[in-house]
Image (tube, rainbow, N blue to C red):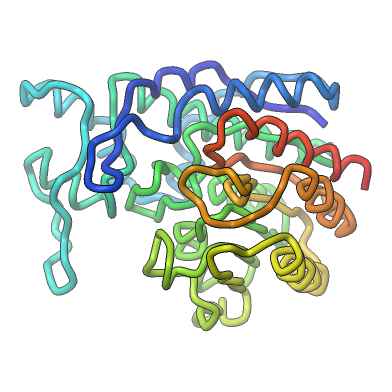
Length: 342
């Protein structure tokens, strides 16, 4: 299994977030990717390769042109306004307010975000572009006939909507890769999101479509971020009715209940019969994750990978969350090893 990795993710460093009422260094930090890279390379699954440049056309197949323009020009606008870094939004649109893009940078930040978890520093936009190129290069490998590939994306992507950033996510890497696979000939794609937090952006992007099945196993939004999507009764709309499946689980969930949800999601995927499977791989389900409340342990990730392997589909793993930095590499590598052995 080839791993796609870019050192350009380091440009997104020194950023902060609003957490527990304080401005703190972000939990989503460069060390995460480096711990993963080291652990995966140590297992010897296959070579590590750099991403190919794909430009922004594949991104525009998923995200609105105005949103992409905002991301690409935000740093320039901020500097022109004479502001110090880092950049964080501090205003948001409430229900009932009009969706008109403001002219000022503060208004734009609120218009295109849903929380204060997406910070910008001077290297953030370059890191975002490299992350989506990592995912698209992984999709290229699958399209070229590889049975599996691992895209070590940073920043992550599954919380990003078509024109909204949040939850450390700017461009939805998995969604862009899925659309690219469809555009290159796949008839059906399934996305299995195993991150602790619901992949609200991925759900929203494909919610009214039947060519992408989205299955999310995650913390119950009645208790946990992102709070406003991820309930079990969200099953798709229009042509997409029945092609979205959510498995919200309570705080304290251990592997027995979690794996039962995985089994059901895998049965849905098998019945759907996708040409390609994408796995939004978050390992913040780990028992010692600092911002999560599930109880999975490192050996459990072997079983997760093995169960996914039984689907027998060309599979692209796309990195999402996981914030227990000392364990993140082991947990990702265990998942991939379980898949390869399965």
